[in-house]
Length: 205
Image (cartoon, rainbow, N blue to C red; front, side):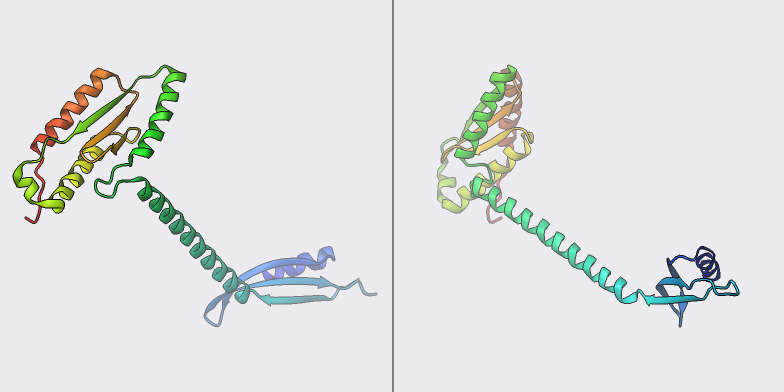
């Protein structure tokens, strides 16, 4: 390969740059070679000068840059994810994990606009807790927190990504079912009501 590159440079008489990789001292090395030829002499011959540059420092520097860029990209992705999580948490009720009322109403306005433009149905369902029994009241705020968490899990698990669930006030929840008519909404929420009726909420064992 080296001899062929030398012959090509001599034949054309123009500078020729090429790269060569081979093993040297037990290590694979990359070299960049610039071949320069002299004008032809009286005997018609050319002199060939080869300038060899070891590319190992360059390759190492490029690898370090790649690693640094990958780390920066990973850090940016982590920061973006954290920002989204923080922004999402600000929209959610800490007790139930559902959206707050203000965000729910924003989504409701968008759904109304979409329904007006595309003549599409949607449904809103309100859910209210039954009055707490004396045993539940005796558990205090900690017991109530477990119930709110369980309700939040049920609503998140029982609705689609395009739907929206929120904690409307202390004892009520609201569910926006996008593109769903009354009959379908009734059937789906009846199924959710049955799950609530059989739900076991564990509190301190």
